[in-house]
Image (cartoon, rainbow, N blue to C red; front, top):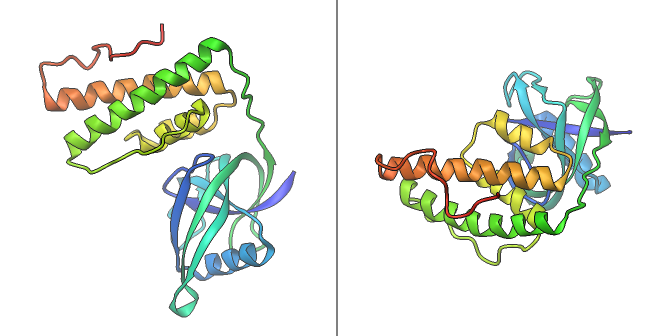
Length: 217
């Protein structure tokens, strides 16, 4: 186990996915400056109760370690920064002896073992996420483009989880999955359900339970 400075947010970070932050609170300025100086990560955790700014928020117990990629210094010590998620962690203890929250955490292992069938499911997921982005762009009049999608099914699953217009409670459950086959299966099902809902918004005659173009069975 090790200590990790925590940044509770009203969002969820997945391994391999980027995040952009504007740092303006004094406690987080100090935290980020220490991470930059020591070249160490910080933990992004979804808020369970409380607010992002002001009082200390209570986070969920599983989060994602974020490694700083770029920093843009601003006036008064504020900064814009980008970071990338890597390993997941579980909080065993919260410490309040710093201006910011610190967790005593352990890295969560992720089982990447996949059968041939799991790999095929990953291929279907790649097709499905492209379909989802097309439907999302139509419904929301959004210009979303995906170029050079990875062939790694786990990376695709986390990308899909990031894009899904799902409740934070669902996304937190995705983050807590510890094995690739379960993650791919769960994300595939969630994405297919979301496509059905979006298509129903476009054409109410389409049943939300209608099967999508690909089946996991």
